[in-house]
Length: 372
Ligand code: 8OZ
Image 1: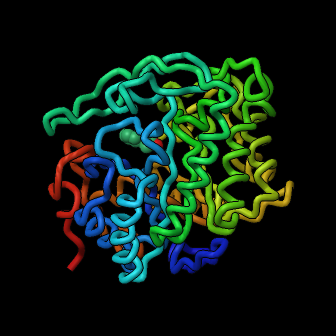
Image 2 (image 1 turned 45 degrees about the vertical axis):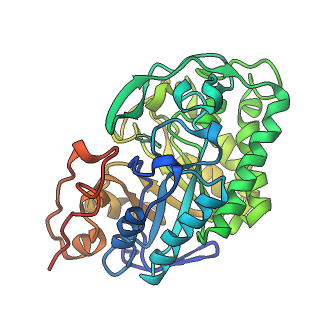
């Protein structure tokens, strides 16, 4: 039987184990530039004997317009590429593997974070009933998102190009690949769902139309750097960031079938409500993840199947027994740099300190103890 501790070839990336560090927003990149402290944090979790077989970086903005929170990193400028290169060099020196999560927040933003103080952009001018994190005078402040404006048809190719450039930058910065953030109510997910997309052009209405933008982005990114080092994160039923759709099953079945020809390295599924109930339901019927995987496999999709959300050893083993290839842990990696070793040895886990999740310095970031 497959174990979490067995190696796996994932597209172009050879992993020493199947334990993935899930993307975690930590708001410690002032000016959107990665720091040496971030290199320390990732490197602490990089050695696959003790830490992750694969690290998915914190969500990283593809453009200034893609920013929605204070002090999250970006990957659009040369300065950001150079700063990320120090992170990836350090991770690789520890025998780790790391992909960067490419992010455009869409409407989950605030005018204070946008170029020229403008409105955030979205498929439609519908405000998300949720909050973003602004760090004001060093203190995290949870504030309502701003009213967005609807993107015009002629703006969409420019955003696809921003993803393409970010993927190219990721390779220049030494990443092993990218994960496109298609989850949690951000721009790509906003296009997918009828709750945030009421467009009447080719990008709204039918499932085919709502999926069009995500698929254009995925085709552009895979053309740019090769599908075998590209993954995609999806969260079919999450209510995060006011994501709403009454019929997620046919929507996501369609999306994954269309992705099959792109030769992706992996698909990353958040099962249930992000960071919450695994059995969360949107629409009338529970989501069938096995059917989703079958939709992908039946269409010829060969990428690794990564699952996430509130996993522990028992749930991770069950997922692998049921056909998942990779298991991603988020919060447990915050407080346990040596999570893989602890899982292997059945050791107790440190509990993370929520007060230090978003913003701050080394406290609650690089100061968690490892086993002796
Ligand atoms: C928590 C706080 C801010 C952003 C996500 C990128 O949910 C995030 C995020 C999580 O995907």
